[in-house]
Image (cartoon, rainbow over all chains, first blue to last red; front, side, top):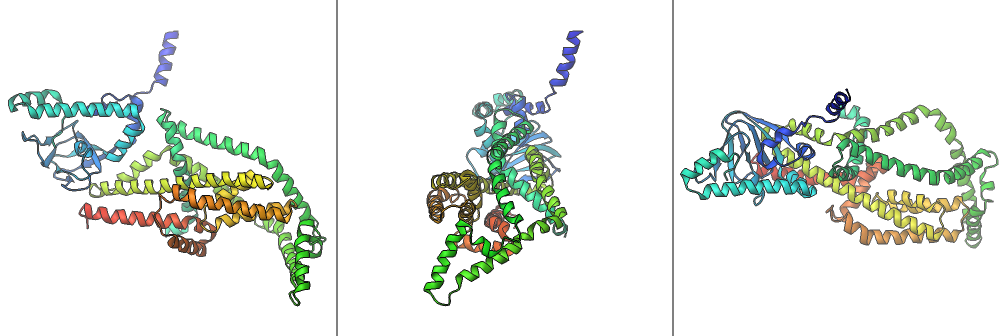
Length: 172
Length: 336
């Protein structure tokens, strides 16, 4: 009986993690519930119709987009292997964030796209003001970049098999 | 037209927004310590209420005593003529000085004019209680409207991110990033300016309290704090702080020389503020020529009194910054 009461109290106190779905993006996979809650405060849901431009080359770089649904074509500095279609659980704008103030390529929605957008300044502030969270995000970003560099430095045939198994990455 | 008719509500919203900008860093400090936002806001409010309660408990008894003394003077209405008031010790010194001047300079008649002014001031002061009673409804409604400001600010602080998201959801994809940039610029400009002003208020309040305490002004902490708040108004605020200290000394029967010392103390505080505090703290956030600041303050005062003297400079600066950022980004995003 006591166990039943304790179990019932736990269901009241332990609320379901509303932001757990954000862990599907590789750079957020190590964040705990409160950190995801803090991150979610800065995420904006945006929808783009098929054929709509997300941004053009040389636009000021402001937002980083995380794709929830749909496909985006990146035009401009495409991946040397020609891989320039971004799909679900991938992101765009993160690489440029660290060294550019303008977009190095343009992005267009191929199908209807639902994405989460965060300002790069908000992300920087989150990283700087919350060191533990910042370390986790930056570690995940470095892991993703190292996978990407490994992919582009290996021969094409073996890189395709790596791409199909590694998950998220981002062409320039 | 809606904004015009409901301008009092919008004015309260603006005041609540100002309060929420000032309190936001403290709320964020709690939030970074993994305290949920609603609890962080409640904690900050409890702290402020605690500080106000301590302030009130420390200084209200003295203020009530002085208020009762003034009230007793007002109650003796018929006796409170100009000829009676000049016999009060701290006024008698000024009256005697004026009589000396009248003797030395023929035809000056300063002393009779002082009695006339005191008579007219007495009749004006005697009508204050009746004025308050006749307008009690307006006074109560104004007070209740002012009381809603902390409540509005509470919800603005608690739901800051939700309000921001809701505002940005209204923008189309073409203008989304532009709106984000403008909102961030507004946040940065307003927030930084308000927090710099708050720091300056605290610094001037602290220095003024210390200076008045050394000089011997009664209730130096309260007078110093009021002088710190009045200092917000550029060029004219410091005079108000000094005038309040002088008035307090006069009411408490202080010597004329003490008023001179209080004025000197306020002057020293202003020198430190203008040469060290303001350039370091506020000067870095606002890049306006002093002549432009003075003209803006005068125009604000002419338009809407003390409140507009207070808000005119930040309003002009924020408007200028936003227009500049908007124009640059409209070009960068190839909208114009």
